[in-house]
Amino acid sequence: MLRVALIVLALASACPEGSRAASGQAGLEAVAKTAADIPRLHSLLVSHQGTLVLERYFNGRRATQHANVKSVSKSVISALIGIAIDQNHMPNVREPIGTYFPGQLRGDANAARRAITVEDLLTMRSGLESTSGRNYGAWVTSKNWVRYALAAGSAGRLFWRQRHAFTPRQLVTSANCICTAGATAIGRSCQRWVDDSFVPRGQSDFNDQLYGYGWWMREFAGEQAYFAWGFGGQYVFIIPRLQLVVVATSSTATGEERRGHRRTIFGLLEDVITALRPAA
Image 1: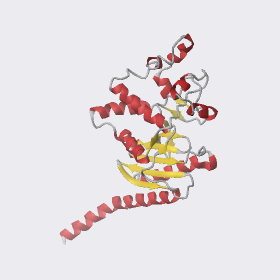
Image 2: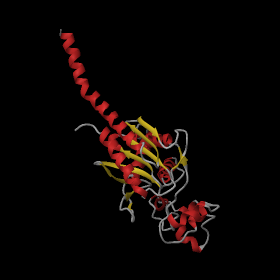
Image 3: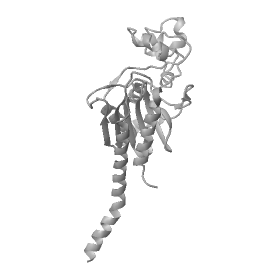
């Protein structure tokens, strides 16, 4: 009888956790069902505590297809800069870019451009003309993207919108590394760079959101989030407290302001947070 009682007690004590896990999965399935009805959405991936718990593709997309993630690549480049500094290929973010582009930035006319720092580029405060919007077509069709960007006017902000392609799985794997950095000496170095990247360095003049080294930041459903953001609805969200990574890719045919696509993705993210957040 005692043995039976102990088994019943063990099962009873396990039920709340099991119920929360089942509830969380049910919540994710509800999110996936909502996502399936979004015309421009291509993928939605959710990693929780290092495990991929949801992976869905929509509107004819497949897991093996690459996505043009647009400005999400700026966040990837930020991580590469951190690695370059860690491996002594670059002294620090205050290094002037003239060191790396001597051929393109010769002469007195380029003195101000030579003084632009790596940090200026990381925070989109270089003072160079934007390559977005009305300038995007001319820049992206130019023979040398770097030369074109460096030769741009002295007003505005540089918005390097590289057309790098990744699969959504590659994005969620990379973001998991950022979310869980710190286990080794290299990891601790990486964590320091991540922490520095997530410090607000400026504020956008078109959406009022804070920006660090290639990462945007704001709260969703009461949780602090950091995210990579690309034109058309390309996102990598990191919520460190929950060890949560959410990736969404979308059609790049139009801006995400059309028909509230951005708000829809933000709503999906908040639903994911609600489904996976531990009970109080």
